[in-house]
Image (cartoon, rainbow, N blue to C red):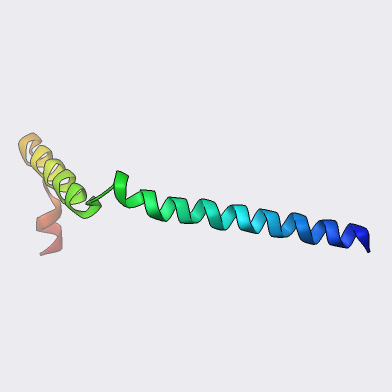
Length: 64
């Protein structure tokens, strides 16, 4: 009986720790990565520009 109580207490402690860490992640994620879509678009444009400059931008032709 005592070991069951200790296991339940340990499980509750781990769940509480996980939820707390997840909440901290949710709050701070927006501070570090505010506009990930815009960064992704800019990076994609850089890749397309590099492919165009190197002469191997074939994908648009394949998709049409």
